[in-house]
Length: 177
Image (cartoon, rainbow, N blue to C red):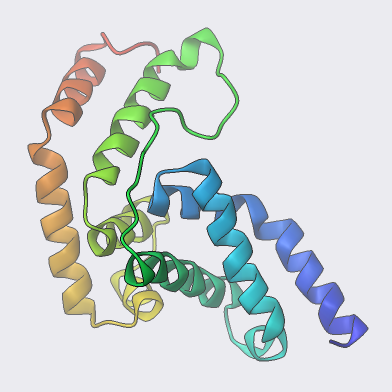
């Protein structure tokens, strides 16, 4: 790889590493799997960086690689996920305890969604991508994104743990905001 392209790649990784790992964590539910997944996707991006760098949005390209690599984990062999309740973040101050509980409940709920629904919900509502952008990343139609998002949100709404956290947040019992 030419020195200029390698420099661009290193700059991209420095700028986007934590964001990509966070997205991978939301897809996998495990900090170690998230780092492995991010490294795998970035390794593939490095090998084809000349092509990736020419795209309009290299981050979207690498994000799609994350989703594909995560799907490959399930295709190659059945992966038993042992998800943890603790997010890969440092402990928060006392005022943030309520938000941490909410985040833990949300991560646990996301872990109960099938991988495709989880990817759609994470990208659509956590990453705040449009339906068209999510469809592009996942290689499907916007209609598929809409239906997967609808099904995923319906499952999340039906989970009692999330309803309890939402009730506590609205009544002020879930900690300070």
